[in-house]
Image (cartoon, rainbow, N blue to C red; front, side):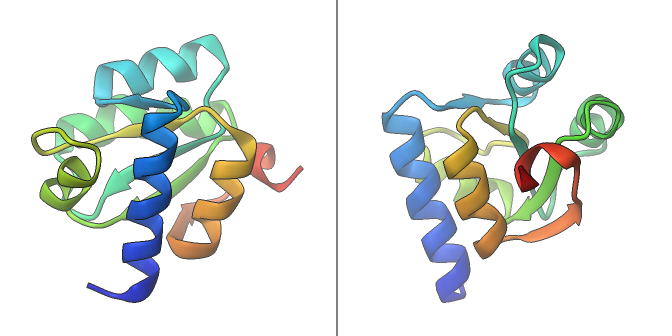
Length: 112
């Protein structure tokens, strides 16, 4: 695993402890619907269901889509089983993650 991926997982772990994440596909989708998601992190091996449920709504809401490590590592960093989607609820955390993770589609929200 690269240093960037390790740093991103560390930042996600801290954000989880601060309750600044919506963890899981359904929670991330709910955060998108409520307009509180600043970015969406999908694992590199995200399921087709996760992509279908999160990508269109994130693009519609102009929320950055970031590709993270695989679902197993993402879940382990968050103290959970494999995780296929995470909504970042904090703008500063989202900005930090964009430096570590590759952006799949940058929206307007994170760049502000």
